[in-house]
Length: 267
View 1 (cartoon, rainbow, N blue to C red):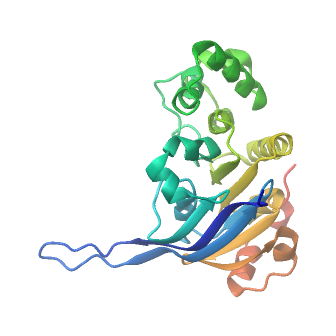
View 2: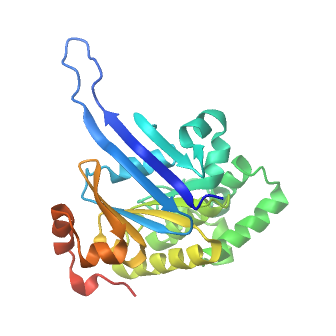
């Protein structure tokens, strides 16, 4: 079995360029511009860059929420584009996303039980008894109390909502989690708790993470490798310790210079 779970080859995503009646065509924006990445199983790749660098667009391409303009993304040797056409459920059983806004990503009209049961029905075809057992497992996995399952998202703190979001992402037992700014909306102390939870889950379940963030202090805490994006391109990539100790690119050095070193490590 190939070690690399995720392979990205020369991926480009363009926006704009559409013809308009009586108006000039919209300008073409290269949101992702020739990106290539390999990510091994059980590892965490941190993708960092300022707003507009293309990192969130790349995240959405990885999970099939957007399609590539050119290039190829493969998950365990299978084309993400092909899976989207042929068997979306097979793709979403293997890769899931955790979003930036913990509360906004949850349906306010659904209880936690209903939120967690949705992927179990849609992706796994579980019956009521199996769903009930799995929901209990998921709530325990993310360290929430069992009685929370019959409450609504607005009854929880931001950190608790993000735990629910993580539980939902894990429901179908995916191999890859793409986490798009998952702690940026949380207080620093709560960030540390969520990062510790993610590290524990990865160790227990051999999960592979793509961790998107503009915050290098957070990435330094969790990532084994770092890719730095600027204007749609990856300008530097390497082991986390190497990038932070000896950055080679001017843009990487600029980002690192902005880290308040006294808060660069959590816990």
